[in-house]
Amino acid sequence: MSARPGAGGALRKGWKKVFLGLALVGVLGLFLFPVFWLTLTALRPESEVFYVHRGSHLTLANFAKAWRAPKIQESFLNSAILAGLATFFSLQVTVMSGYMLSRFKGATNKIWFTAIYLFRTVPYITWVMPLYLLTQSLGLYDTYLGLLLPHVAVHVCFFSWVMKGFFDGVEPELEQAAYLDGCSHWGAFLRIILPQARPGIMALGILCWLFTWNEFLFALILTGSRTPLLTVTMAQFVHELGVEWHLMSATAVMAMIPALVVTLFAQRYVVSGLRL
Amino acid sequence: MTEVHDGTLKRGGPPTGEAAASLFRQRRYFALTLIAPAALILLLFQVVPILMGVDASLRRFSLTDEEHPFIGLRNYQRILSDAQFLWVALPNTFFFMLASVAGGVVLGLAIAMLLKQPFPGRILVRTLIVFPLMVAPVVASIMIAWIFNDQFGVANAIVTTLGFPPVAWLVKPWLSLCIVVLTDVWLQTPFYVIIILAGLETLPREPFEAARVDGANAWQIFRNVTLPLLRPVLLVAIVIRSIDAFRVFDTVWTITKGEPGRQTEVFSIYAYKEAFVFLNLDRGAAASLIGAVIIMCVGIVLYWGLRRVTEVSR
Image (cartoon, rainbow over all chains, first blue to last red; front, side):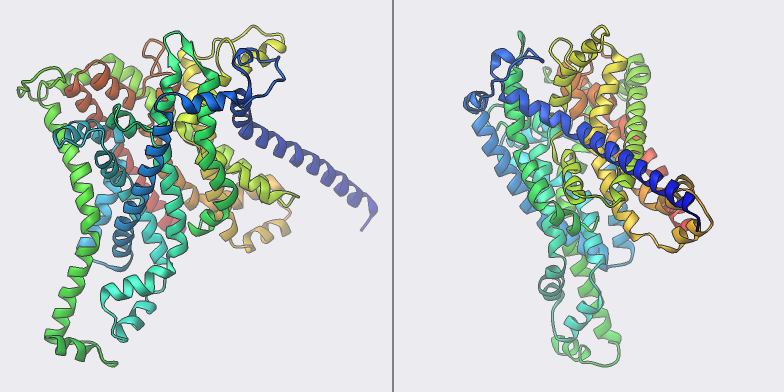
């Protein structure tokens, strides 16, 4: 080995490092800048929000004011409760359906799988518009129940599919052994197989909560003044005279807190649970 | 009955005759019980609404009118001859779908390759990069709309600092649509990054070593080894995301509401406005069903394509 290629290699490696570092900073900057800017806007006093260059004052007043704005606290509470309930029921329903998809073969399985794939492709707008009529005729419009069941329905297709993946990762021999030991079908499923799939199910639960918390279209069409949800209420800072950006930013930052918590503390758990 | 059943479950040969039939029935019953709740919810809150939508689309059905006379396919005729639907909403939808998926895949690949390298703080960066995926589309839209605000946005502050005249970002339809795409790419790129990073970890090492021995450079390795091996993973991601992108609503509604001049409407916005802004629920339903049929066809084609490609690569 002569010295020259080695030196050239080292030089090239140095450049590569610089390039990589710059690329990383650029990527992170681009991805985090919008969040940074929104947070900064939320922290600025109202009078300075409209001056991009000036203003070194930071204040929490916007948060306090936004928190006291009409319907905001109610919306936070409603969104949190709805997301919790939707998560609970979605998991209940799809864990069973996913187990079926993973363990059974034959016509029923094929039909169910095809149905799930097809119904997942149906755009939300196609069924949420008639749902407006349906919930109204059932007297469920703008109530918890009228919001909860559609929000469970949203998740049935995709989650069944994901759950199937979890159960595919559990060996069928476990059930065979359980049956031989005298377990019933339900016993084997609930006591032997389900605990094996728990990490994935918990991860999916966290995501389900966030999805429902973040959901907008169903909330827009199926809620009125009685059961306001956060994503829709946020728009109340848009008036005919303009947008109260300082208050809207503060609300948006508060709405992002669960996402931040999950990203920082539960993300590795979520990612590894979903086997991504 | 139970005795026969218990007898067959003793260790040893497979169950036969009557007992086997009974076991089979039990298992079938169990399978049906497992999917019953999911199927019921799907039926009541997705199938029934879709059928109601079909019914509404065949009538003159407005929110303000009590009578709903049957008018056949006239609503479909109206929609399919509406230039706004055919030449604005549909092309915008497909543009959005292609641009958002293409942008996400390219950026996702680039960032995944970057994050694959060892460097200090890698775990922290990998953690932070996932954040957009957890943020509500509405919140992301508010952020981006504020950045590109004509008068007070930071984008124009940068543009004017660099000596250019300020840009009316959300006034031009083209630019508005691109900003919506940008928002979606911001939201979705982490999804591709996670999937691609996970896919990279499962790839066999031999092809890479062979390529290195053959003297291939980094780009050649990426182009001829990494990309083909990643193809199944990428295709799954593309199918999932294409179907989601077709029904985009939140970001477009929050950023542009389809304005200016209805030029940035996508199909979901068109149907929503028809139903809840112009109060023609019948035409809104017809438009949303036409969209559903289109995306179902796209979905079926994508699914078949996906199966064929993944089978070939196996």
